[in-house]
Structures are given as C-alpha cells and as structure tokens.
Length: 365
Length: 159
Image (tube, rainbow over all chains, first blue to last red; front, top):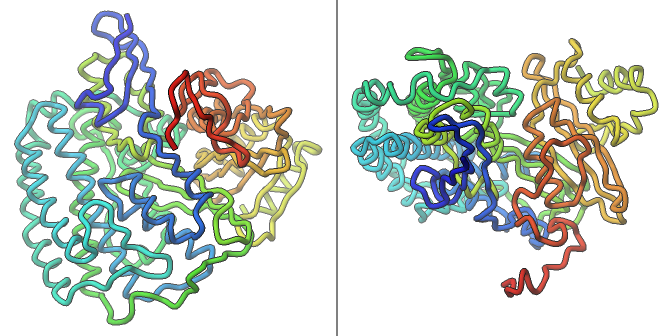
C-alpha cells in the first residue's frame, strides 16, 4: 500500500511530502517529494547587479540559523577577493555563528521532542532561545533574517554592553543544558522511541555525503571547524561530540539527537573563549562598493548547524556572478532518508525524519 | 596528493579520456574528463589506495553559454584530506554524461537537480526525473536563455 505522509504534517516540518510504500506497519520504501517552497535562489543570484545583494537571500535558506548561511557566503567571497577582514569582525562572526548553532539546535531538539510526543522540552528550548535572539536583535536589529555579515565586514558594530550580556547568557544557559538532558535526553520513553531506530552506518553516511550531526552521529569525527578550518576556528579549544551507540547502535536517532545536545555545550565553550579575546577596532574594511572579482571559480564550505554548506561560485569578471551553486546540507542529508527508513515501522519514520533536522527552505532553496 | 599528481595518475591510467587540466588557474585547479568515461574515473578515484576520494562534496550543473553545458564534481578524501575538481563538458544537442550515482549515492539527487535545471541527461541513473519542478514542466530554468512560460496547464505563471 502507498501512504502519503505530509505535506503540512507537523512532523514533516513544513512542506515535505513522503510517499511511503508499506507492507502492514513495515516501511518497504520511502520516496521523498521536495520542491514546494522553491524560490530560485541560484537564478536570482545570476540576476543580481552586485555580489553584496546576495547576502539577504542566503538568509532565507536556513531561516532558523540565518547567520551561518551568510557566514559561508562572505567567507567564500572574501577568499575570492583575497581580503583579510579585521580581527574584531572575525571574533564577532564566530560568536554570532555559534549563537546560531545553539538557536538551531534548540529548534531541532525542541521540535524533535514534539515529534516524539514531549511538549515541555519545546517550551524550555524556546525560553532559552529568546535570550539569544534578544542579544542578536540588539546587535543587528532583526530576529530572523539578519543581513549582518557583509563582504569585508559587518553591518553594525556590537553595543557597548555586548560582552557583559554574552557572559551573562553563558552563565544562565549552562545549567539549563543539564536540565534539558535530565528532562528529555535520558528520559526512558524518549530513549525507547529513538535508540536502535534509523541506524545509518558510517560508510553509508559518507557515501551519501551526509554531514553535520547526521554524519557525526554515525561516529565519524568530522567537523569542518576542526578538519578544514575557516575564519579563526583553529584558535579555539573545543571537542567534536560523536555518536558512540551509548543507548543503542552507533548512528541511531538517539546518537544524532545527542550530538546536537552536546554541541550546544561546545558552542558555549567557544563563545566564552571568543568573548574574552574581542579586540577593539573597526568592523568594516575599505572595499569598493561595486565588487568585481577576477574571472575564476571557487568552492568554499563551512560548518553550519546542519552540516557542510558549500558555495560554488563562478565569477566572469563582471559585477554579478555567472553561477552560484549552493550545496545545502539538508538537501544531501535528506537524500539518505530512504536508506534509514527501510524496514522500520511507520511511526519510526517520524522519529527518523525529525532526527535529520531539515529546514525545507534549504532543501529546495 | 597535489593536483599535478592526480593528473599524472589519471593520465597514465585513462589516457585519452583525460582531456585537459588547469592546475595553475586563478582559483581551484581542475581536470576535464570525457563525459562518457566519468563513472570509471570516479570509481577509480574512490577505490584507488592513493586517492581514496570517498566523498563527493558537490555536483553542479553549469551553463557555459554558446550551446555548451558543464558538470562539475568536487571530490574530497576524508582519509587524506585532499581535494580535486573534475569537469565534464557536453553540448545542448547531446547532453549525455555518465552517471556516478553507483559510485557516490549522494549524486542521486544532485544529478536529478542538474537534469531538472539544465537538461543534462545522466546515463545509467536509476531514477532520473525532475526533483524541484513539476513533472510536466517545459524547459530548464537555470539555462541562461530560459524564458519563463506565460502559462502552465492553463494557469498564469506570476512573475
């Protein structure tokens, strides 16, 4: 029998439709249908009159962690233009990107609880998320679509009490991670629903190009912040959490979930180090208004909360790019869904899909 | 391995199938491969113990204008941490490239996307159909000469 799951089913996180081929309760195959939000990001880029104009559009891909999508794009453009940005900019960008990671993981964890049937952790996550969004809003004036990272700098400098607020947040947030773990991560019902479900072995994950917590949940210690560092990530001291099969098998839903929970702790560590090294200085370097990179092409990837975000940019010597291809982590991670679902129960599909943490804006751009 | 070593290794193994190499360009160095030999070259790069390119980071379709289309493969080895870019060029009239789906599963959706957006046909792909656009859509939206149709199934296309 064929069953449609979604679109507009809460567990499909918006607008994904899954065609389930089932035999009784057992899932024989899953055929994902994407392409419902499509806003033609890549076509838009070719029609821009300026490279800087693309930044607000990158925000709209992963809209729950927009800062990381901008970060990847400006890093790519700065590499193309061979500009070195001021130290202050690098540090603020890292703090903002790590805030974005926490914000994204809070959504992932909170809504994952909802998928499984736990409501309270969602409220806890939203409560803590608000504190971060307040700091971000104070800095750049927006809560969702920031347009904060510009090529060669930032749109605004931070407010004078920024460092103090960030320190206060870290002190406030650290006990809350422990609380969340007690409430959800080691909860018996939650573990029963997620451990040993949707196992993705390491070599299959690599073959599918999976990245981020989906790859690390399978036990592969691969994080671009460590393995292929960009910006100033090589200066920080932090660990890469990986799935170890603590409650079930390596690469099951619980491992993928737990990698996110532990990454929040590591992000707080990075933020604490960064906020202490924040130097004084300007946040905008002097670059021409109309950017014209030399003709050539580049592929730059960064580690967003969801995984490897790559920008393949072809410049033809004019003020607008000849081609911008985005390699979105959610698109690639979602393509591994059928292999994780085959042989499981229909209710497990909800748990497996939630554990990938997709944002549909990024899946079909 | 550095790009020059990749080129020497591929040239000595595949000979004529390796068409061109630009190793000192402005940005990323690349090697151009004959489109129909792509699956063999991909498999070789994945399995050879000197290269072990187990990860296909990105596969992009490109409109090279003047009636030409390109496919760009960004390869990476998680063991050795080296990268190489492969390219295949085809014409709009004969847009056939060998599929690497059997080598890297991640190519499944990426190739479908390149097919959907550029009309590049990947021979040997198990399920080559549109992924972003509706099944009965005409034309390939990311081609440079693409014109948005006025109507789709009798409905006005807003733009």
